[in-house]
Image 1 (tube, one colour):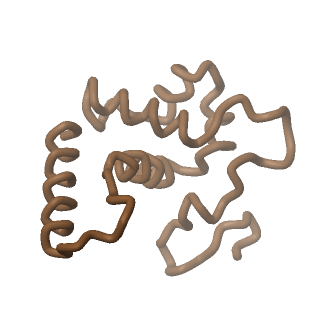
Image 2 (cartoon, rainbow, N blue to C red; image 1 turned 45 degrees about the vertical axis):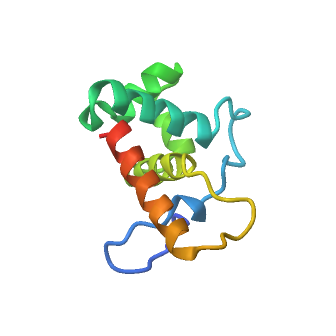
Length: 120
């Protein structure tokens, strides 16, 4: 760990968002959560493209200062991780193990294609 609490996997590799606590222990009580922030970022990207997703834009839409947003999401790379996780939640997995693994893999590939088409 670095003095700022970031783990160092490689010289330039950012730590995963999941390496950080959901909410800081100092300051006022958190008004937002990562799921809501990710959902907002995905909505903006869907409506206006990925370039429209900025920390400043998210903070403005959430009604908080940009620096306050960094209490929830330490870096834009972490926001990308949250957005990816949000979209992965759109996959529908079978409740029971599939009887035909190849068909199950084909179904997951089809779902991935459909998600990518819905969210270019």
